[in-house]
Each structure stands twice: as structure tokens, then as C-alpha cells.
Length: 239
Image (cartoon, rainbow, N blue to C red; front, side):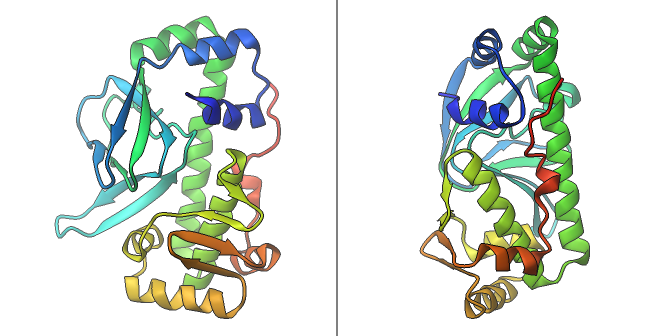
């Protein structure tokens, strides 16, 4: 059930058989959600954390006029709200972008396992720090990158993150978002998104159509984005 999560963790940390059993014991049920469903609402009391098994989820904040900013995308294997274990209430919403399957980790189980296994506690502390690192890269994109480099950076990041859990190959990945949702990730209008996708296509770097991203020149896409995967901390992390 949680193999992609274990693959994601195993890339960065050595996990013993006993620790793997403890991690598997965290999850008490699996839920299915349709697309565009708010799974966790801002300011509500939370007693569990959400692990994404299949699909795409996001964190978002919005204004009273309905304008929404997506602050991070979550792919299969990610905890979408591990930080709720200590915060108990979130300042943002968590929503499905596609149909999703999620596993529920009650906070009392997280407490029991992390107290019994200090290395697992450090692994999950690392995971929340990694989320913060990704968030800072998105802030850089929204504040300083051009529309072209901003979009290139997002697709470079997704190529790497999805490849970790075997959801991308050298040629690209499935990506079931529409241009409005992509605009909400990038802080652009849908018209600007359409124009920028056309630029990337004309530069023979990538194509996005029919819910599929085909990457034609990944080194070139990385140059346009000034993409450095260091912020994803892909090396093994000793504890």
C-alpha cells in the first residue's frame, strides 16, 4: 500500500526491516477522494496526517474573491500534511487535483512510533524540512523567475520527483492538470500559461497536451529554468 512512500524515504535514508514494519503500522485506513475535493480545511482541528498513495494533491490559499494560489504539489508517496502532527490546525487547505487514494496516519500512532523509533522521527523531521525547501524554491520562482523559466522549473522538479516513485520516464510523465490549475501553481493567467507552453514547444524543449508532459530536451529545459536539484536533497542522509 505505501510502497511509493517507502521508495521515496529509502532514496534518502537507510531503513531497517523493523523500521519499515513500524512505518507500515502508522496507517489505519485508506480513503478515496474525487478530483477537486478539499481533504483538509484551514483552521479545522486535525487528528491525523494524510499520505498520498495515488493522484495529485496540492496545498493552497485563496482570497475572498476566489483567486487561488497553489503553494505546493504533492505526488504519490508524499505526506501532504505531516506538519499537522505538531500544528494541529493548518493555515492553508489541502485539495485533490485528480482522483486520489490516501492513507490515514492518526497522530496518536505517529506519536507512538516516533517516540519508540527516534530515527523514524528524524526521517519525518527531514521530510517536513524538505517540504520547506521546495516551498522556498517556489517562492523564488513566483518572485524572480520569468514566466518561461518559472514553468520550466516546475516541470523539471516534477520530472525528478515523479521519477523517484517510478511515475516518470526519460521522456516525461502523465500530468492531469488543466491550464487554469497550472496557472494557479505559477501565479500566471491561463492566457499567459498557454503562451508560455507554446514558447517551450517552439523551443523544442517540451510539449504538454492530452494530460501528458513530453520532455524533448531535459538539459535545455534545465538551462532555461536555471534548475539545480540540490534543494530536493536527493543524496542519502546519514543519521
